Image (tube, rainbow, N blue to C red; front, top):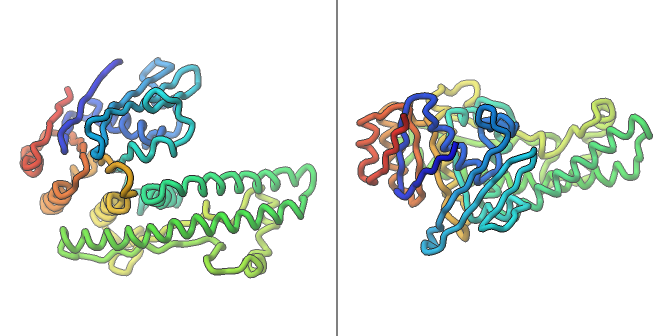
Length: 349
C-alpha cells in the first residue's frame, strides 16, 4: 500500500473511526525519528498483512532553513534495515536526531507513572538527548561496559571468574553509571520545574509535582571504595544470576503529586495530565541549536474534560512547534478550540 500525506499547517487534526489508520500515520512519523515503533519492538509486527518489507520516506524542512528540503527514509527488506538522510546512509541515531526530533504522546504514556521502570528510564534518557545530543556517546559507552561485565559473569560458569578483569569492568560500570545518573538528574530537575510552571499557568496550580531519582546502589559523590564496601554481597548474587546487579540500567523515577506517590495515590486523570506535561516539557529543554521538535498526539486528549482540554489547546497555540493530533471522531468543540490556528483537518474513512 502506497500512501502519501502532507502536513503544512502548524496544527493538523486527523479524524476517523477506530481502525481507519490514524495511529499508523503517527507511528510512521515517529519511526522516521527513532527508527523504532512506540507500539512494538518487533519489526515483523510492523509489516502490512502478508508483506515482508516496508518503506517510509519523509520530506521535511527546518525552521532555520525554510528554503532547504531534507529527506529521511527507512527501508526494511530481507531482514535488513537501511536508513538514509538526504540519500546518504545513516549508521547512527546521532546523525539524524539534530535534524528531525519528535515528541510522541499516546494513551500508553500514562505508563510513565503507572508502568515499569524501563519506560521511566527511557523518558529520562530521551530528555537528556533532547538537551545534550552529544551525551549519546556516554550511553553507548555504558551499554558496551555493561555488556562486557555481564559477559564475564556468564563466562565464569565455564572458566571461573577472572577477578582482575572483573574488577576493572566493575569500576568502569560504576563510573559510567554515575555519568548517566548526573545527566538524568540534571534534566529531570529542569523538567520538574517546567511541569510545575505549566500547572501554575494553565491549571491554576492545582497540585505540585516532584520527580525523585531512585538510584540502585550507585550514588553520586561516593568513592569507589565506599561503593565496594556497601555492595560486597552483590557479587555472589551476580555470579548466580549472570548479570550485573547495580548500574544506571536499574534506576527508577518516582513521581509525587501533592507529596504522595502518584503511582499509588493519584487519580487516572492526574496521572495522565502529569505524564502529558512531562512529555511537553521536553520542548523547553530541547537543544537550542537544533530544530524544534514535532509534536504527535495520538488519541491522548480525547478523554480530558473540556476545561483541561481547553487549557492544553491554549498551551499548544502558544508553542512554535508543529503539532499533529488524532481523534477517533470529528468533535466540533475540539475543532473550535483549535480554530484560531487555522488547522488542517484530515478525515480518514
